Image 1: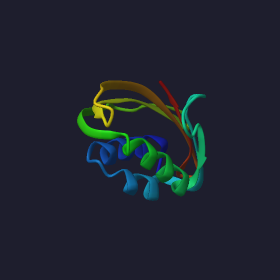
Image 2: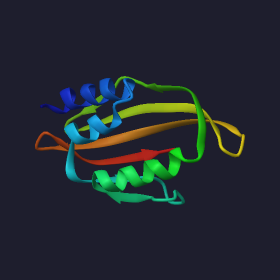
Image 3: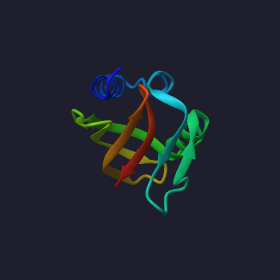
Length: 117
């Protein structure tokens, strides 16, 4: 698959809530995921690492109210997505998040993702 095809497939799967399928289909087994310094797990590797980070985060959420994934922007072997959501957390506070994800593709798989928020 080309970078454009991978980017569009990623958006399609995420819009359907099929995150596990996206990771197993589109990501290299040893991909790296990076979040800003100060995040609970700022850098993880592979599907197991991303699942641990997601579990930590999702355990803090009681209700997701809305979410979005914009269409991808592709440049060479990279693409970016603007995404966000609104949720009520277990502490009762409702928050809205917007972020940019930048993805690197090599040999038909995503090898790195980095989030800016």
